[in-house]
Image (tube, rainbow, N blue to C red; front, side, top):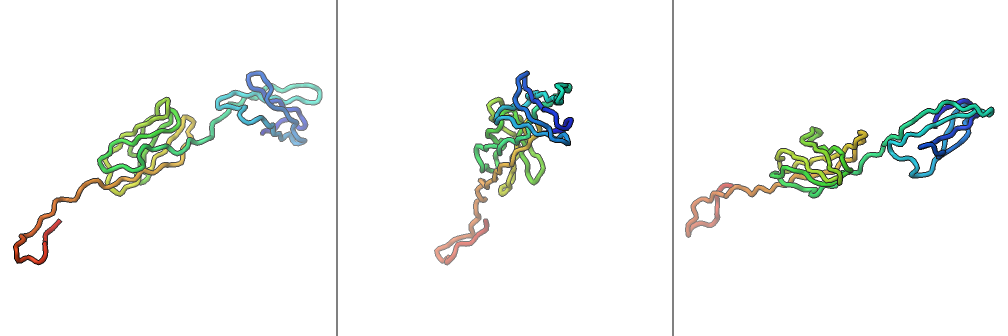
Length: 174
């Protein structure tokens, strides 16, 4: 979409090949439809306007932008324990993966070419919920994935008070 001289013929090209054409309306507004999957991120397209006398404008060049966020990171284990020091999984290749606790970043790392990532984090308290996002090279941020921190620490050994053959209950502290 855009604006040009009213009633002009709009031509859109990629790599010298016409991929769409249309007329601008009387106020110059235009919209040119192109087939799905014709435009790829970082493609450079040229848009020209021609009047009814065949005079063509200089081309306006536009680079196709990526505005699509990565999907939520796939976490290998959506639950971890309080001793875990890495969050691993898969996301968009080369995306920057961020791990948050209460909206504060506690770790980040870049995914590899195949999208696999490993983010080092400090040990967390049991009961915490971590959020993991991925940001692609264009700054698009994914929805978050959640990771719950489970308590894997056994309770302390109980201290039992003296038990005799006369005891009717067992008491102590834990």
